[in-house]
Every structure is written in C-alpha cells, then in structure tokens.
Image 1 (cartoon, rainbow, N blue to C red):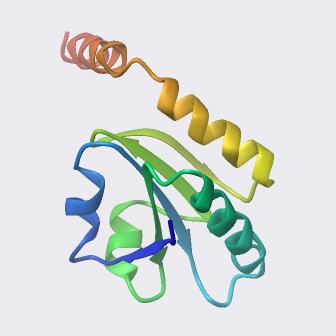
Image 2: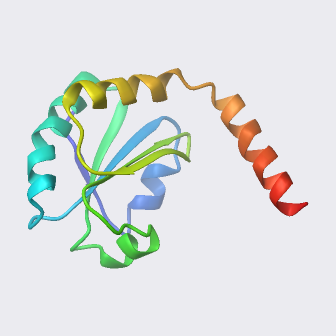
Image 3: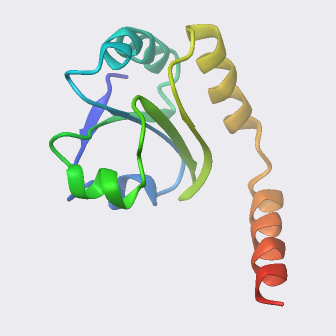
Length: 124
C-alpha cells in the first residue's frame, strides 16, 4: 500500500478509526526525513492491513504544534484510535517491520485496561 498524506483536516479522522495507522511527521528540507522515506514506503508495501501516512510538518504547522512535534522525523503509531508508539528519529527497515508486527500483536483490551488504570490513579 502506498503512503497517504494527512493534513490538519484529515488527521483526526484517519487516526481515530479502527486498525493500525502509522504517521511519519516530516519536512522536505529534513535530510533524515528524506533518508527514511524509502524505508517507510517499502515497509508499507508489506503491510497492506495497516495505513501508512505522512504528515508534512511545514504545510501543517498548527497540527505539528498541537502534536508537540519538536524533532523530525517523528514516527507515531495508532491502533484503534490509541497512540501506542511515538519516537523521533529514523529506523532501519527490519526495526520498522518489527515495530509494525509488535503493534499487530498487542492485546488492545489490555492496553485499554492499562490506560483506564493510569487515568484512575491520576485522578486519585
């Protein structure tokens, strides 16, 4: 599957749905971003059951600020509307493949339970 672009208008709808959504926050002037792009594209072709998106931080500065992106590239992974991974920097294809497979293997009921517990203890 080819990557798709997300914008301030489409981001929320894209990441809050069912399934796995990866977001590569990048900019055209960023050397590491350009270096990571072919790896990201290649891995996307191996996982047609996940949505691979690209967020141009220059064209969507408001969204980049709202997401508190301070370094690019930043990779975020959402599953069923929950952010389960966020890290700045690039990674080699085997590491990205492993990350996607780990996200696929997550027990989302357990993830939701952990979030509820964290919110409960934060309110106490």
